Amino acid sequence: MKFSNKIIFFLFLALVERITGAMPLKATGGHKKLNKRAAVGGPVTVNMSVNTTSTIKNTLPSSSNTTTTELQVKGVSKAIAGINGTTVSKDNLNLDVQLVIENDYSLYSAEFCFGTPCQKVSLQIDTGSSDLWIPATGSATGGTTNSAIQEHGTYSVNGSSTAIEFQDDTFSITYGDSSGANGYLVVDALQISDDITIDLATFEVATSNSAGQGVCGMGYLSEEVTSKEYLNLPALLKKNNITSSNSYSLYLNSEDATSGQIIFGAYDEAKYEGDLQKLPILKKNSDGSESSTYKALFVKLDGIMAENTELTTKSYDALIDTGTTLVYAPSDLYSNYTEKYGTYDSNAGSYTAPCDTVGTPLSFQFADTTIKVPFSDMLYNISLTNGSYYMKNGVQQCSIGMVESSGDYVILGDVFLRSAYTFINLDDNTISLGQVKYTSESSVVLV
Image 1 (cartoon, one colour):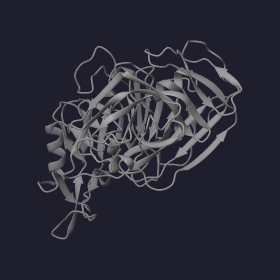
Image 2 (image 1 turned 180 degrees about the vertical axis):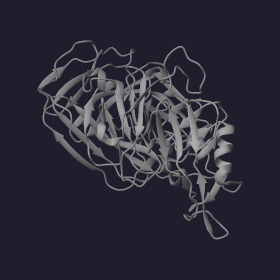
Image 3 (image 1 turned 135 degrees about the horizontal axis):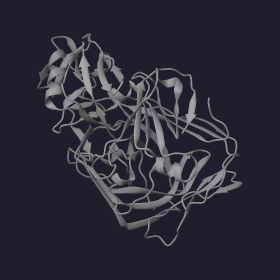
Image 4 (image 1 turned 120 degrees about the vertical axis):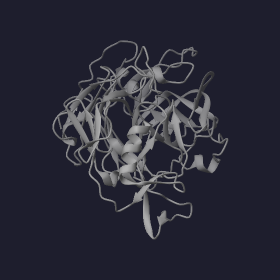
């Protein structure tokens, strides 16, 4: 590993059950996501090594009379003033924190703990949004049941002795299938592991929730839907001198792997082939329209090929989104690919093909770098309500992992990102991509 006298923050992610076919699809800020989010299965294993500790400051919402809060790591002996502009050396700090969470397919999540006493909540990790919101206990509305929300954990303000409510600072988020959540800001303890607790962290609590599982948004703060801006997780880590930059790398690992990984403020040279291709983030809103500021994580996609055939003759803006499972593409690109390998099945609600269909990798061109997605990764099992798989004439059918979008841009979800090592730097407004290399080896470079 290439680090010395610095803090590396590792977050291992869970893959949550992959469900396609006729399932409704959900969008945040115009992009689509799978509607159902399964519970994280199995026990959580925490591998922890903490050599020294610190107190780190954060800000409260502007309506508060208190000006700072503190990130408390047990055994504190050295203070770091982060957000108010004071720079203090952290050369004597050395944290190596790893959180391992079990794999249960498709969307990626991590478990956190909120309040005093601690209330466990599993949150989806989402580069396609920016808000950190969690469901309030008993917040189910619409088609979502309280039991479905309880699968992932909920938070009770009244159940925490350290909660501070800011009910005038509200949020409201709506999804493409008309589900959503709304509520207000709360400041309370946020526990990342047994040894790391943010005593007073700002997050959103959904008092009305038809979306289900909460979300840990990883995008620009300008994309937050709250009435008052606050620091989300990657920004908080930099402002408090835990990391040197507002950046993180994504290693989703293979579709059959038990976990993936995020490294904040660094990337891992062992996890990709060749060099990373640095791409400028485009100034786009989440619906693909032009913006005067940085909003959503769009880059330029120069081309897509299958079996040495160009599927499109034009370039597209492409959104990097861990919160979306599949690839969403404009009608011409979608038709050229899905009709090449499958037929439309009205029962499944998608183009399908026999699950043993053989095809060549789908190649995505970004400047001088090509990311190849194995064809087998583009096929998704179709689960029926009785627990069996969708069959036709005795042959199991799979959904082809590309969906038609209404916009003139592409969304690159997990089916793409499992094949791409991705480094997102929100400080210099770039995203770097490389062909992933599945390995347990590590060579971490701080940024």
